[in-house]
Length: 258
Length: 313
Image (cartoon, rainbow over all chains, first blue to last red; front, side):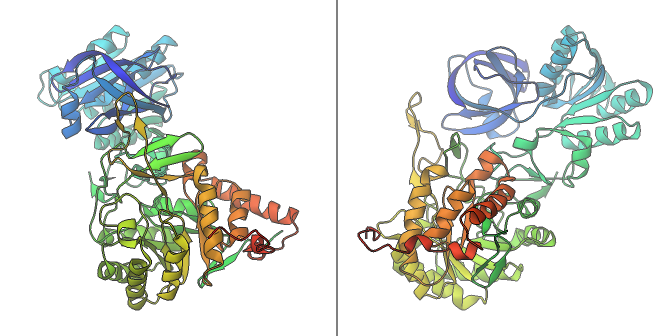
């Protein structure tokens, strides 16, 4: 389904990230994404950061030109939405380690909410370049998740990449499952560390996307298409996708190292 | 069990169902996946001399189940980046047909040589994309243009050359005739039908490019009419394209005169498993109708045509 909606609310989450809330009826589950059409500009895939009820939301980080412009969208402006597309996180594991890097929290926050609502114990290893960029820090705290922070500059939590505390937690803690979203090189490390202790991983993967219908091949990842086979993949699936954490494809379909 | 294998311009295909160009054809692993799903052959995304990102999004509008409107804008990595993808598809055992697009006969011939060097089994010339400035229909919209491009490509390579023609003209069969005269081994028809969608709340076209091409079930009768008309005017084989999602759709195309068919939009609505379902469905349908093979069905609908049933010229 496709609709044109008005932005109801705009929340500046971090210096480079905003959330846009809008009314959109179709049911959605944490992990799914929508195609967001910014008229006269472009249409991009965005994970839903708010999935419950009709007041949905996407959380956009300034990465390229269109996302930078999208930060300027004001309440009342009209945007196009189609979807939701893709699969979702299974919220039933009891003890979950969540590893979120950068804007990865956008898709993981509603998933953690769903797990907490079922009584799951959740530890979130949250990483960013610097303290003000720790996305959804308060939201995770409000859910009752245990937070472990890491920043590149050491302004909050441990200094360094979030993979450091994540690897330690995996060695020390007892978890039933690992969820991760963030830079692909980070996710690849998480998958490998979780594999070393025999834990299953679910990764939310991003690829250049055009049709979102499993047709145009822009988001091909090994034998998969992120739009219809993902965006949430198992560690086993990713083992058969040679490009994961190594290569992506640009808009022309050209394979480039990450 | 009816025999599904067909010969197409020297290619022996295990069944008549080809993956249409533009669908799943950017990566070699996807082409391999279509082969594993049961496609008789796979046609690559149309490849040009240099990489193109294609148009900005939105590039697609879905009419759930019955059609897709697209203006992708011929995104492709460029011929020099593409041999690795063909190699991956061929390693999986796929019969690969390389689709190319150029701005003039010389560029087509140059691309044809490079594509032939990748080891593809045949070439398909995109003379029919309805929405790319300087390519597709804009360079293949008249018999003279089709003839000039096909002639130059046929001179340049030894491979079978399939000319994919547009329905967006008053006499598509004249384009097919020009392709045959110029030495094409086969003709595929049709490409998408030029079309438009408007969002009334925003009062503007939905697709970033404005105009696009319609595919899917909505255009099946259009494609059938083209194939039916062309069949009686050329003697080289035809590949039917447009709105095929069931075995019966495919058999209609065979009876109209197609030797093989291409399937694209059905992949979006039904997944790649559609190839397996089409092959098993066609086998059952041919058995039911007492036809021993897919080959026997080709052109059957033309028997008895003539008593006031001639195609409207």
